[in-house]
Image (cartoon, rainbow, N blue to C red; front, side, top):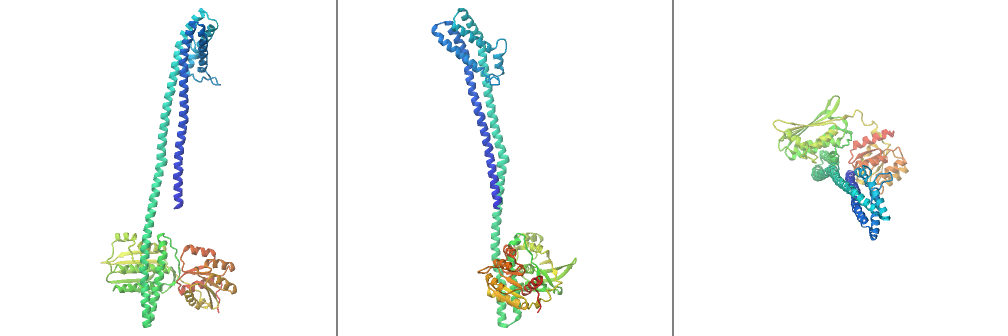
Length: 575
């Protein structure tokens, strides 16, 4: 999200800079053109002034010549010099020979025709200078006649210079209009292709941010409700554990201990549902299949629900097919969670009557399926309600919702269907493919009396329980409380397998696994942890872990995993 925001900011910034740069270039070009045109206009004014001055000078020269006074001779000389310099200025050419101030009409007047103005002007200058040098009546007459012939042409030249200046002025106005039109066009282009898309992208970004904020608020609200519901749901099996233990202490009825075990399993399943909350939201679920007794998975999930049904005075009938007496590979935690969710949901919406639970092992196209059916006598539903329920959180248990139940069922490769019953009630049918275990745990599992196991666990209570679990499959279990002690003990004696916790004092399981793997590249390292972080598991596997199991451990699962790891590395040793 941060990278996307930075990309949008950079895009907006670049477009804005591009728009400003385009305007700056246009304004700079306009300024340059206007400065040049203004200079040309000032030059035109100067040229017109000189052209008009030529008419006045021609008449002044004729007047001074006619008077013939000695005192006017200096003024006459200055007038002739000025007339000559003005003529040279007006007819000035570039190095290429092209006239600077004369357009086509003026060139025709000055250099073409019967008597070109250039010839007339030069002849007039020559004549007046001759009169200035040696005044004579004849020269005076010629000067006067020449000035009269010259004056119309000078008038025409001044008029042509004025027309040329006006045409230049008109061109300036046209260029000003063109620059204005280009500016408007540039603004339109910027608005259409820069600012409008930029505004749209910013609006879309704000919409996405608002959607993300709403999603975050919804997620926070959903998690708050989820945690509150988890707290409530955890109390149900805890209450059962407390009640059954009291019954056992009072009556020594071993059946109560079975109920306690079922309630503990229910707690374990609830903890998995907490772990799945974020994964299911992202539709990313890692299925963990292991060897289990299928009947026990179903029975354990249903026993805890049975107590809830009895509290509501509902009849609870559980019918399990004999076909379920098999060992299989499946994700027992999530299968158990789905079963308990469906049963609890049926109990929640049934106020009177009964809950019927059926389970069987069926084969479809040579694929074995667990078929689990829950029937209730509740109010039932219509299919519109079911479609709405898929997108709601209105569901029993930890409020993960029907949609998440279906996501998890899909992740397991199964199918979940709801069927309306007549006259009332609902029938839920869950079908999940399972893998029948045709090969039992290695036959010598119980003969691992020579295997030496190093247990690294900081919690003494947990360590004692795990040691008890390991006694049937190991001759020696050495327990240490942290990674540093594990390294010291491992260097002193050889072990066939290491059971490693992760979160420990002094030296944690990550560092211990890394160093232990450096000491021995072959010994199996089985991570036994309550840490369900996928990131941490990836890290410890990268450091050299062989496999992992989550706490709380089931003895049969632990035995199978240890036997499998030792069998893979060839350390199964008979007594």
